[in-house]
Image (cartoon, rainbow, N blue to C red; front, side):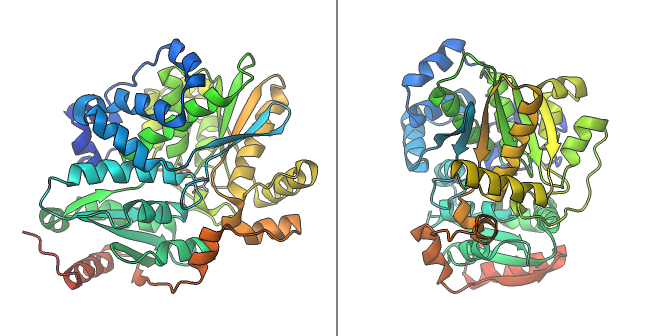
Length: 441
Ligand SMILES: *Cc1c(COP(=O)(O)O)cnc(C)c1O
């Protein structure tokens, strides 16, 4: 399997190159040459398979012989020390809980798989691999955790000052070791812009092996297809039409779902559910894509004004708006609606939604209102404990924090503050690295 850039289908590259580079030199995004077709029998048979077995099978279809089967099996084994769970919440409505990983957010799936793959590729390199990550909250801790103590790798986490919850900030500034937190005086889009600039900077690229670990990295996207197939395998209602609702920010998660559909997964529709940062639902309605500055909401991991994976979505559909509309239903919700949904589901079913899961639940309900005969799965992307202040204010109940979260609240925050311009980032990167005594020969 070869990979190309969304800006040019002519130049093909290996999986290894695509993973290490993160972004193609032409500033596009890597895409697989084709989406592997998975035969219908596999989806039927998947009911007998474990999450790891499904993951290995799909990973092989994307990576082929670039990683030997025994190594890939070990990578899947080490990456997935947890599993998704499918919980019925209402008749024909299920929550796919993706937050049972070490940082209690779905980003553990992509981050842990990617970290293992990168460590495999970096093992025979002489340079230290430097990972740059822009995070709106959960990416940072998931990536930081995934790379903790891996040899030959250092990680720089850029996050917007004041733009993440206290718990998220604690999670990403207390890791230490080879993981550095940079607190940017700006919003998430500034962090994302700085990372993109770093990749285009000749100086940095000459001396360092730079890589990205955002959802733009293809090695994070591929493992996100695995749980869509696992969810289907766990579902008992496959005679009804199945739709899946995805709470979206940078649209990596949704893009992975569309990959799975394109592989043959029998899902009739995906819901692109957003908070008021709704440039993609607006595009689906009007045909016009107008990126803009993001606005803060209670589902802050989705506060994205210029979603990076939109280029992949366009590419997947050959810029055909009608084809995209046939597969994706877009909708957006206010914080007020989100709180109301959290309160309702808690009072009626006793199920606790986090603000992101609540947005995807609302998206599912919105679609189901017009198509009552479907079976729906909404993705629960974060443990409610990560947003316990919002959750507690809505449910009026004390929420017990998972021990892992409680522990990291006590550790001292360690972060370097920088202004939102590339000069500051470059200075700080140089400083941190020279303090560590790395040489870039
Ligand atoms: C990152 C994140 C999202 C959005 O996922 P994308 O792939 O960026 O669309 C949703 N919910 C939570 C909890 C997240 O951390």
